[in-house]
Image (cartoon, rainbow, N blue to C red; front, side, top):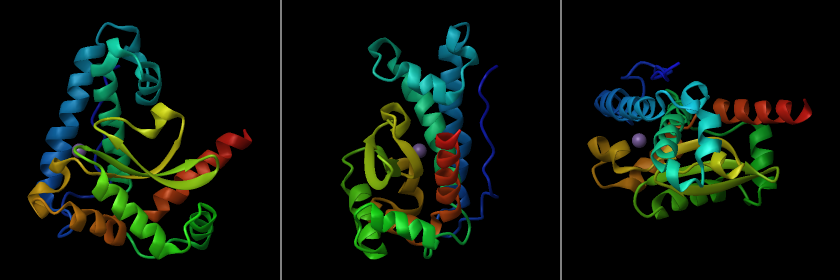
Length: 206
Ligand code: MN3
């Protein structure tokens, strides 16, 4: 079964003006679609043809002969996760449960966490992703380069912000700092973070 482009979880104009319909048209319909199409071409007729994206990522990570498959599978997965990491009227203060995880993760308060996320996203040199992850049971802010993602490192992703230039160039030009600040203040979907946290806890208990 070939992979298919998952639809956006909201209409294309739902995040405007913070992320325009034009950005989503290019980023979802063209960039994300291309990763899916390229991946399907690379795995056609191979044993990976029927694997989930997550399994494909785990099976091809750190395998130099499978770099192209890894890159396209990880980018396909990362983008779907990124769309769901945002929502219309997102941002704001997270729930008490998430706040507790933030302070347990060693962040003094929400402002310090916010600053750490913005600095990490700003500091990722070149293309990549900024992540909120659960590592060793604790919230942590990390970045990855190019297509790399936490799944390849057995870390639990909770939310991500795409910091490839194509994610912000139409709306913010070169101003990555403004884009990532908008992401954490206005776009992030804290319910999705809570959902990923609950899913991880349920898996661990099972
Ligand atoms: Mn992208």
